[in-house]
Length: 183
Image (cartoon, rainbow, N blue to C red):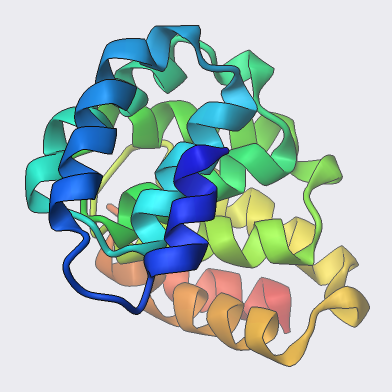
């Protein structure tokens, strides 16, 4: 919760790198005690701060801890975690796979924001994963069922993600397939 508050407070201020470094060091040492929501909030805060560099050890620790606890994440926590890892350009290959599997399991619980955030994160990361075509197809099918609930920004992000999906899919057929299924 502290990281979330700091992200809100200092997102547009300078001179906060020392405080962030101290916070990252402290959080890294305590991550194993965090709830899944706290892990998601911490990762989200770092994504909001566009914090990279010195935070790599923290994000790697969060990714490792989250991978072992995927079953604990809510739809919101899962989408926040995926978004933040993609936003910070963290090396999250194994977490990407774990999130994609869990997202497929939670597909019916995902709201419009979750669907667009997850699709964006998977595609933005540029990582290739054998499960990606399956999860993106699952997200597309669920999105189609919930299209009337999408806000303009969510819909824009979703369409961008599916248009770019062939860049990360082992099959170059995925982008057109998703667009056809969504529209």
